[in-house]
Amino acid sequence: WDVVITHGNGPQVGFILLRSELASHVLHTVPLDSCGADTQGAIGYMIQQSLYNEFLKRGMRKQAVTVVTQVVVDKDDPAFQNPTKPIGPFYTEEEAKRLAAERGWVVKDDAGRGWRRVVPSPIPQEIVEQEAIKALIEQGFVVIGVGGGGIPVVRQEDGSLRGVEAVIDKDYASSLLASGIGADLFLISTAVEKVALNYGQPNQVWLDRMTVAEAKRYLAEGHFPPGSMGPKIEAIIQFLERGGKEAIITSPENIERALAGETGTRIVP
Image 1 (cartoon, rainbow, N blue to C red):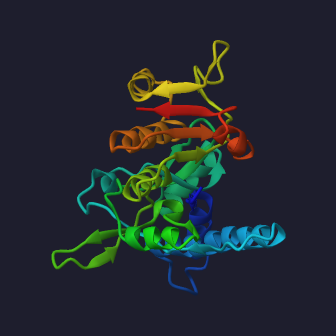
Image 2 (image 1 turned 90 degrees about the horizontal axis):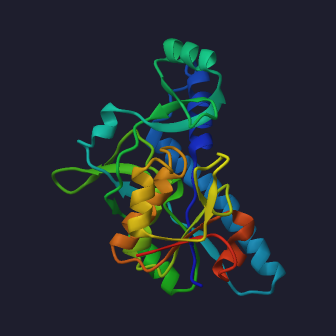
């Protein structure tokens, strides 16, 4: 396989913002788009160094490279008026509401796991560095791109780019990149081995395979909640409807077995 790796950054962006706010009496605060760029560099560095060491251990002449990736969003996206993307640490409801009052945050319950700060999450429209990523893949590099969903930018009237304060959903951005580079397979690695209907309920059912039509139906029935499995399924539907052939959802430790067809949930057109 020629591989492009994408990753999230929700906790890290939140930590950078929190650190920035705690130090605001001595230093200027860090804009949200710069927080995204910082995390792309730091997390990308960790992934590419880990891969470098693994390739060395295996005697493989292979190298990974991180591309600081900008992603165009619509400046009029309604998400800017309705923040939904959780970032940073988890709080109790009481702590979250106190911090919201003190710091002007918007806070929400995150899929029953606790309360978190939320920020705007506009829909990704274009991967600015897509052609550079394609060229690197063709040269044999493993590419780490659209980290944390990419750095959100808007295109101005003269065509120039300007950063905006938001965090793009990593699943949607990864789907857009997968389509743009003509990926054969879009694999989302998450906390579960397979997708389930009635997740966590006594009548839970694990799914081995699902079509786009079935995925849409299950989504409409509420099986895949927002902030959890919902965005992953939506991102895969988008990839397959844009001409993608196949997608897989599984956990990190099961990726090899999922690629061999032994586990995971396969989603097809």
